[in-house]
Amino acid sequence: MSAETMLAFDTECHLFIPGCGFEAPGLHSFVFEPLFTIGGYEFNKPMLLAFLSTIVVVGFFWAAFGRAKVVPGKLQMIGEAGYDFVRRGLVYDALGKREGDKYVPFMVSLFFFVWMMNLWSIIPVMAFPVTSVIAFPVGMALIVYVLWMYLTFKKQGFVGGLKNISGYDKSLGWVLPLIMVLELLQHLIIRPFTHAVRLFANMFAGHLLILLFTIASWYMLNGVGIVYAGASFVMTIVMTAFELFIQAVQAYVFVLLACNYVQGALAEHH
Image (cartoon, rainbow, N blue to C red; front, side, top):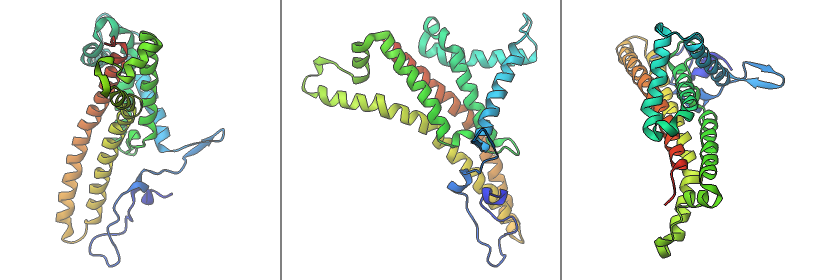
């Protein structure tokens, strides 16, 4: 698949040229042919970027804290600020210091991994958010879901865990069966589904909009269309800046929900 096909437009095609229509981006803009194959496994661009995200996050924290000093250098200060932001702003707020400390490393790793996978969208050449491929948000949501279920039954036992996820409360009387069905749907299907889809949908839509304005800027770059191309290019810059904000927000929300799920698993059922 050529680069032009991936971007969903012909670079020789412009406004006012006969036979040249605007080719909008779509689902095909998120499909990639394998870059290479290792041991029968095919690696495409999103998979490679996900792997690079791991390298970047691990490498950054290794460089920041590998030889930590009492008086931190610039890199260590940045690392400490990021670590402390997740620890205090997310984990401690949801779980408290006593319970939260053991989950800080996991939540910090999850936050920066998601954020890095989002950031590829605005990095030249890479220019693709990994989380706009739903398999990656689903995989991370499943990890959180397994942790959530494990902690629920470990903390509250089998019967207590079932009561927690089913909303069992005999005082509800005749509406109890309905409440239990709704609670089971919420805990077993809706929560993990929305946890993954929220991240995926935002990054998918954001990347699609950036692609749309980028392609439109090039397509209208002809004759008087240059005026429209300029306006479209400004929108590309605006959307890119907005996407930079959304990338951080989505990483924050994803980890915030993960912390809330863990908190719910550890809470006593009443």
